[in-house]
Length: 191
Image (cartoon, rainbow, N blue to C red; front, top):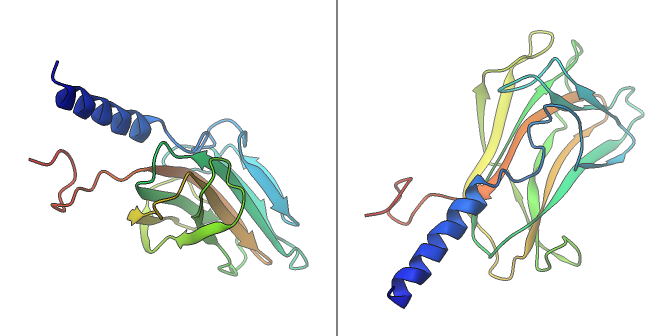
């Protein structure tokens, strides 16, 4: 086999495997909160009723308002620096007016273990209403960023979901994968 074809095939297989690997681990919270780290003063919980697209979600209860902020994170090692698609779905889980404290995005790091100085924070920039099982007349929203170029020295990213005082938020369907948007601006295989 021609060496160039072999290299191309290996590259295609790596892209396919990375995109289908389902990063981060347990991003749908279908059974529990495994593989996620929670820090801060809000109370984390697993909600088996609420979710989008299916039931099961991670919740942060930041009531009473004396609770400050909690952050939920997961480190994902990258095979190589690349462009990333990231999305998370969230909804309010209370009949009280929300404080709109949600923050979503990811930090890039040079090492493969999300340590050292951050190379930058990449927040979500798009928002849409999506179907799901919500509480108290709330809607599910999907926050996302697509085709986000990472610094060339990136070796890992730290996915970040957070909520602050006065909110009770649930999160679901967290997706972080290699972008499939090609330079010709069409998704899929370029000609």
